[in-house]
Image (cartoon, rainbow, N blue to C red; front, side, top):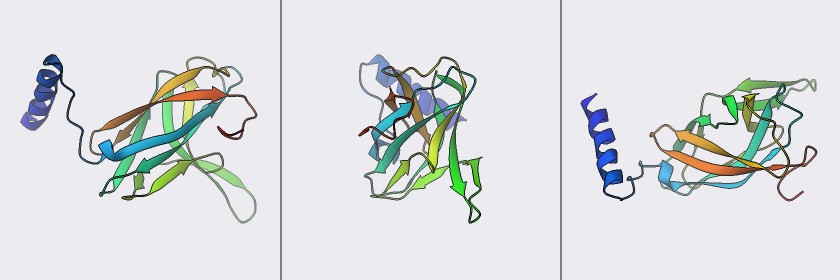
Length: 155
């Protein structure tokens, strides 16, 4: 507990001095590329966001959570189709991204599931999505909302 108080106190002092807070080991080496989401039909059905999460560091990083003001329950999910052609979707607690590797969050696979939408996802707008990592670091990205039938940022 004392260590946590020290880290939080250090962050407050650094911010008060007008300096940036030091990055946590690992998550500072994460970049998010090509974020996008499809427009939703209202707020009753969940939305989803997609992107490539790249680890440019020398150590593995673990994505453990998501946050956005757009949805009360953002989670990492994975869609799978079995040999009989039956699809299912399940929550994923974490995703480990090895050093120098990337993980694609894309339709039909891993994705950011946005449940309990607070507002409709409207084409042409965007929303912030924060990725949280096991080391305590966070990466926030602005996610553009594309048309409801889009297949990705390239169209």
